[in-house]
Length: 186
Image (cartoon, rainbow, N blue to C red; front, side, top):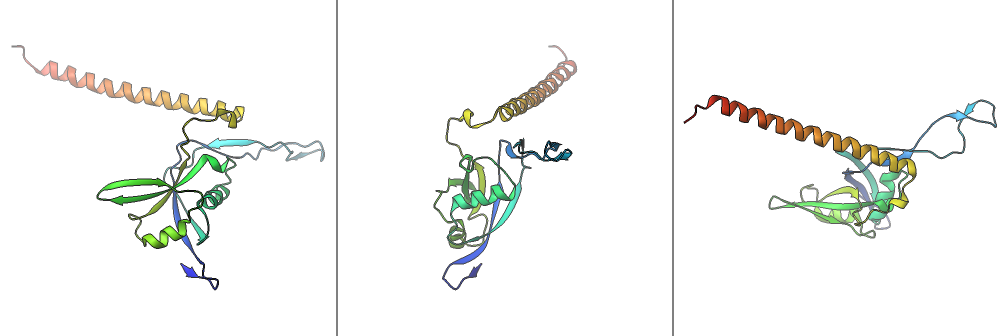
């Protein structure tokens, strides 16, 4: 961290992204343009959704007075995510007595100040970006293609879950049959 002449300071914070749901980014699809008579970009705004890789970490250089809501905005800009920033929340993670604690930061809290007060240990304090768990999902906030994409994703997840369950029960059945075959009656 470095101290500025006005008494504020700047420094880096490390934020781990633990997003369960896909995020939306602008799609760059080329379609014929009527104005130029050739291939070009039109004014149609398209989006595509995908999952960010698990364990994604981003370092941000911020000011001491940067608020949690501004950190969320900066992270979304870095990954060109076009979703509403209100869908996300910044959490502080701490470990104490082998227990992990998560606390949602208020929009006005200053992560760099918290980092300075906690010291350098990431066990004492680290930051995580997660979905904002507000309870009920406002499905009207999503576009039709996003909703269709969510249904496809849920279908794949369900199929994978069923496949794992069937595999697990098949292994159990096989072990029981082996145990029955090796035992002598009586």
